[in-house]
Length: 571
View: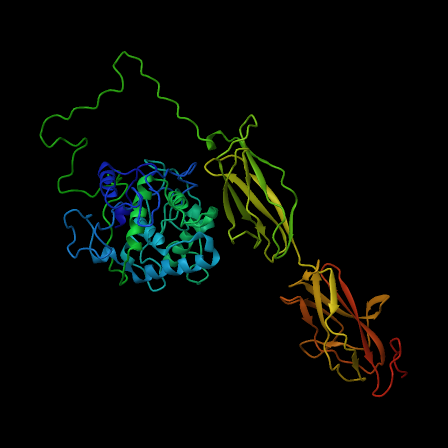
């Protein structure tokens, strides 16, 4: 199988005449969307490749090669006789089934996306269809117990020799190639895509494209970006085309999707078959040698001379110039410009009220619509776009403007950067600085009016509880400091009177690191009294500057306290 994955593919995702004929013939009888499917959806044959998608930037696989074999024609319970007339070359129970671990990974990914992105409506059968087309279900389920492939699954190096040119982006970390990128793993992610799309699907703390749980979850999130609803045919088509921008690829994946939707079954790991037919057949850099290697050029079987291809023009006659291809909108972009973005700041845990607005323009300053612009959150931050993504792609409108999704602040405070680039063009991008400030409160009050009293040398029976709010709403996770001060007019820490105890039982009169809970509440630790009597002050201060002074009274049993702290007793 290593030789198959070392095959050179034709640029983009072209198929050979044989593969194309197979797709065309079988599509007429089974490919979904040729007319209308069982759910009355419109035909997929009218779907067009996603605009401005490039092999290196707009496709998960870099438009690497894929398996072109279509599913059995008749039913999800395939004929027990492989190779029956009218069926694809690789049929049978092994092909119809999905290896147990691989199937589990698809279902777990669907469940996670159902929770995190319910509007996407991702079916696990779509992941299975892509997994079948990309790697033959991890080469027939050849994975270990944790879902990692027994041996790496690598596509050919994308060196521009007959296919896309994607120079190394990961230092060979994932594909072992420090010169050019290669598609990696059961879902065939190129390293540059995995860098932002990768996920930890099996909870081991590692994002590994060779692990089917990680790769399936990453593929699910990749297909659910851009606000796509995969129950809508047009969105489904665009999502699949974004994975590999080929019409034949779309038909092949949709065929397997409908096949798996009608039913499938689980088979043991490692028992699945590897599909026949690759989109790079006929473009092999090192084809398997035959007993009698053909000469180059290959002689005709009939022995008659092979007619040479006609010259492009008659000698002595000027050649007609090739027509200049019409540039895409992306081709005309010279640079990005800010489109009136306001200051980007938000409190930890809150949504940013302002959005990033960027404009794609030509060299003369003309706006360019229908251009894919990528927004990427970079820096030491846990802030994301709505939905938990750190990358978002938006198409510019007719005014050339792309507005990023809303930013959702995390808990890490400080500055970070949102980098904006054009998908498919190496033009200078823009960096926007955003900042997250700590959570604050503008008011803090006691939740009870019970007097806090104690006898000398004793402990206070009640603990003070406070509630913090911000603009009338609960202020949760707000930092609080509690200090026993000398007086309302002198906030210096007192050296006598009530006190707290630290973990070692030692006297402390200032507590930091306190935080309100989800309801904005904080119960202060127990207070103790030394031998001094009188009235004392506990000051509670929140981040944001809200303060509350709480009166504490220390008096002997049966006596009334002085209106102010008593002086230290005489020696």
